[in-house]
Every structure is written in C-alpha cells, then in structure tokens.
Amino acid sequence: MADTYWNHNVHYHPVVLDAVPDGCRAALDVGCGDGLLAARLAARAETVTGVDRSPEMVRLAGKRQEGNLTFLAGDYRDGTLLDEGSYDFVSAVAVIHHAPFDDAIDRLVRLLAPGGRLVVVGLAHDRTLLDRLISVCAVPANLLAARRHGGERSPADMPVEDPIMNWREVRRATAQVLPGRRYRRRLLWRYTLVWDKPVRTCESGP
Ligand SMILES: C[S@@+](CC[C@H](N)C(=O)[O-])C[C@H]1O[C@@H](n2cnc3c(N)ncnc32)[C@H](O)[C@@H]1O
Image (tube, rainbow, N blue to C red; front, side):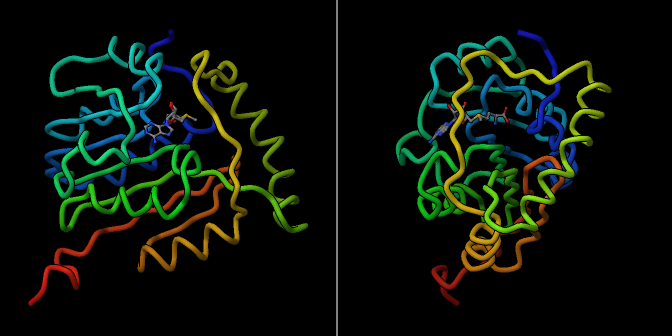
C-alpha cells in the first residue's frame, strides 16, 4: 500500500483539513478506509480516531497507527463503539451513502460534541441535463489532475457503493437536517458540506 496516492476523494482532503478548528482535541474519521485522511488529521488534532467496518481496511490503516492516532473496526452507527457527544471534529469522506441518509446524519450529529464541526465529502448521482453537463466537464479536469498526480489509485478491496440520492436530493435533505450547513457541489463528482453543531440545542433546555 502506498503511503499516499491520489483519487477523487483524496483530492478533497485539503477541504477537510482546512476545516479543522484551531485547538481541536478529539477528531473522528468515519469510514476511514486505509487511514490516509486520519493520518493527515493527526497533525491537526490532539487525538484522532479512524473507524471502518471493513476488517481489511482497518488492517491497512493499522500500519499508520502511532502516536495520537487510533483505528477501530466496526460500524460508526453502532451505539456501543464510539462515545456520543465527544468529538470536536467528525469527517466522513465517501461514506454516508453507504447507509440510509437519515441514519447516517443522525449518528454523525450525535457523535459531535456541542459546538463541534462535521465535514462530509459525498457522492450523488446525476438526474438533470445540467447535472450531466457538469459531470462531463469534470472529465478533462480529472485527466489533467490524474496526470499531475501520477495517476488515480485506491487501495485494493476498498468497499465502494453507488449513491442512491441525486444532487438535488442531497442539497435539499442536508439543508433540512443540518440548518446553516455550507454545501458546495465540486467538480470531480463530489460535494462538500461543513456544519457546526450548535453549542446548545433545543434538547439541552434553557
Ligand atoms: C469509498 S470508501 C472511502 C474510504 C475513505 N474515507 C476514503 O476516502 O478513502 C468507504 C469506506 O467506508 C466504510 N464504511 C461504509 N459504511 C460504514 C459504516 N457504517 N461504518 C464504518 N465504516 C463504513 C467502508 O468499509 C469503506 O472503507
């Protein structure tokens, strides 16, 4: 396994890393795959946990485990694996479409500490002509970027899924469940979303 490589998910790692708040104590990367992003986050947070339900991915990620970086095998939606309300920063790259949308978002929000930040890099599928035009424009951009980075690579056996929701559905659903989120459709077949969990919620009372 290469220590580093380039693909459409890795391309947006800088968006994730730039969103880590100063003074971040505990960061969590869900669906961490082989741990490349978690390893990068380790320079920005006091502790970083990566979690993935693929034993093979956790085995690969374990090769990066050192210092403030820990990897866990399991499902991030499993209520016994991770402590709710304890992460200042949660990232999810190319993972929330592996589960029903509401389940995934609900769990990510619960994992965040009050005032914590969620960053999602996600996939959606094309529905409209405009969607398809944007996707076609990505082809030459992708070729240039891949050439610049020596080709596109991913770890063998990394679990992947096709997205069920289209761009419009994702934009609307995230606006509804994550009020105030900053959403951007990006060129290389991904969107990014940044959301800050309120310090006080209705549930926490006056
Ligand atoms: C497409 S890969 C992306 C991996 C990594 N985030 C990246 O960008 O390279 C999706 C990963 O999410 C993991 N995954 C999917 N659903 C999960 C869940 N409910 N809990 C933990 N890991 C999950 C898969 O095993 C897989 O490694």
